[in-house]
Image (cartoon, rainbow, N blue to C red; front, top):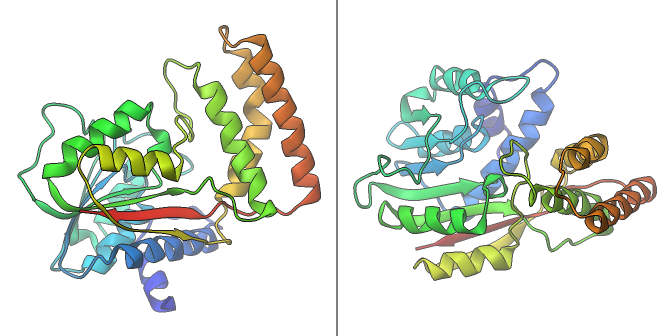
Length: 281
């Protein structure tokens, strides 16, 4: 990975104080994903679930001035902390790579009013965003709708097939979150629906894409595993208390899993799960 590429991209992003090194790690990971997908200079890209632009910025850098990245997200522009999605997107669009970027929030890709011309994009990207979706049906509907808009589908999400004991706390944290998320009518959580690589492959195949390649990419310096573990341990009591329809037996199971998580954190370092990536046509 070229160090100057990471530096150039990070310099275009809105970064909270003391978070420069965190963003460098995140950006280096996104460049690995883009390299696997084979996205080239001059490409036109639709990114669904762009968030604060971690992948958007790297995509824009790679496609260059002759390319174009259109990022959309269902969240509002005032969502997110310590920097909102709106502020992050505005900063990015005003940077030196901003000319090849368009970002829009409050966009439900499944709304009848959201449409693009057939094959308007060379690539459609979903990068670390699928677990924010509310159901399997929603992911299936999105992948089906976008089928005609782009030539290739690029997908990335955490790989639940853990490869080391250090990844176990991250996996257990998201498993716990996904269990109590099943009882929420609405949510702003990071993990709302947990998709395994097998789930994704099945849905991709079902809606008519053909998977041309898939891989597991490990970026052990990513901070997400620690973030998810800390959030789960700090929030689970409040999460369970507000769910009046949560069965007592499941509440007890989650408590047991919390004890396992606490013990795992005492015995092992916390590393992020690897990332499952695929490309389909």
